[in-house]
Length: 232
Image (tube, rainbow, N blue to C red; front, side, top):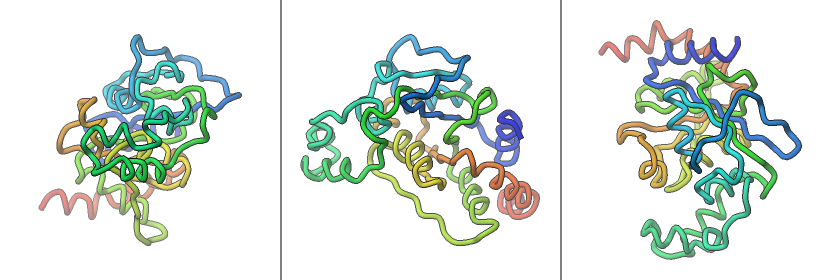
């Protein structure tokens, strides 16, 4: 399947309200795919995701990333000292002290410092290249069906890693890329403050390489268990 077909199947099988969003992280030495333009103003990774679900596409080099917390985790810029030491997040009132905030940063998944040069973000259907990860933003019930799809062939349980911050950059982009497994997030302070994500929406990040198998599973359960549950 090509990206347009994968996107169309995801939208129809799950009943998605928005376009699946593709993300490719460009490492040093890699070429930036053609057909993408830089945003006029600096933009956060979470903002690029939420705008891409409504049809926009971007290539965002390091100097166009507005959030240094997200950019540092994506390997684009050095980690700011105030973030590393916990002062930045503690000052937001989300932690009891800077040590607690620093502990969150210490435990986050991140790419090697300054190992990447840009992120490319856009609707999956428009991607002419292979992305690293695909993000879905929708209602919990809609994204729930990704769990039986992920476990359909081998069974087992799904374990998700999340935190109070970095729902799109760490939870939904980096963790799926580095782990090779889907991860889900309820959102975070930053994306809920800076984007149009709705109060009843959450996020799933799926490694691109896993999508065809998950679609195969969704096709098997969509007319049976999914419809029975949705028509209660």
